[in-house]
Length: 219
Image 1 (cartoon, rainbow, N blue to C red):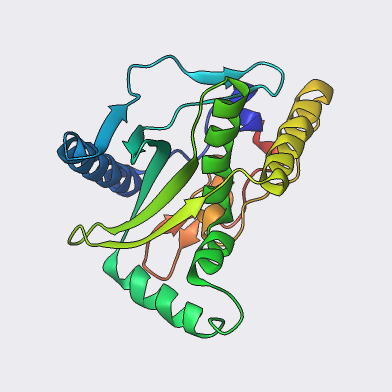
Image 2 (cartoon, helix red, strand yellow; image 1 turned 60 degrees about the vertical axis):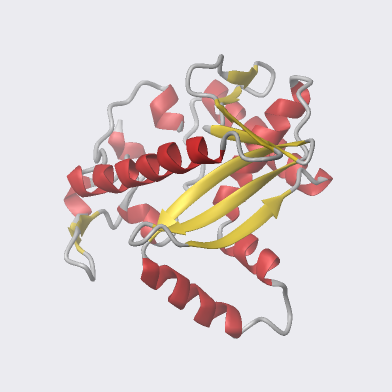
């Protein structure tokens, strides 16, 4: 995001395969949510053409794709499409820790970047005077549209502080022209839009991905 705001051209933009995955997610959302609209007790709002939510002080902007009104509560909803093997793999990982944490807590810990994303929407809504009870993150199989797991995200004081601290940190880096610490880990390095082309190599699935990203040399 730092390089994007600075106007630096992406060094490793999403390839055709990645763009196809994005389109699959869009297709699922834009097919399912309209079907829910009109069901008893459910109202669906698509924010596609709405004014962008934003907070000038935090320099934070964005808008959820869909929100629902369910049982009188406004809820932000986001779906993440995964392949069917993801559910089996994640279930095995959860079995190792299920005695110590709930599946809800496990999924949020494993997908904290998504929790931050939904928390940011909730924070923007709060600062804009909009009332949303919570956000829901839904994991869906792109192979057969199976809705596997769903978790709720609430804007706790701890989550709110973490988001604000991150915004303040990035804004400080922007002001001082200081490259922020890279937070890409694991697969995120491979698919970072600001990767080092000279470090690209095939991964386990033979896809050409980055092995280094977000360096000072990019600019």
